[in-house]
Image (tube, rainbow, N blue to C red; front, side, top):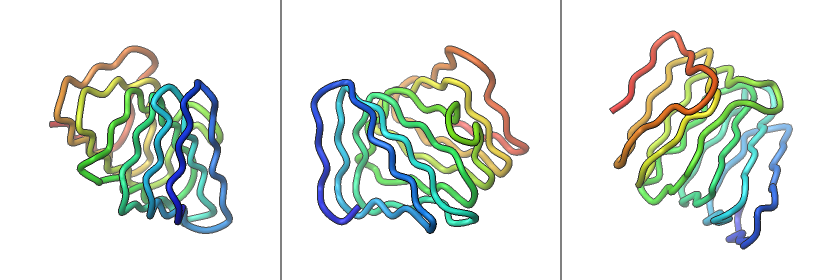
Length: 130
């Protein structure tokens, strides 16, 4: 993503790639869902914030979403492959609700607000939340 993307309704934006997905411009859908499905062993990296009601991640590679401006309501891997096949590192500026989250690699969550699990299971070989 090289230009800012914004939408105001409950629509779903899916980014699917053959390679790494790089979030280099703000992505904002305050009532919407962002789904990120990178290519084989490519993962996701970011330098700009993500602000969405729901973030769905699935695919191979490391998912490094550590922008301090991230504002994500619910995190899920329930979609696409149904899991992250690599490490998942997420920084969130506010409270975060975990739906089903499954990571084959380490799961590290840095959440400024409350961390709440509402459905499914959170699974990872090394799960760290603070």
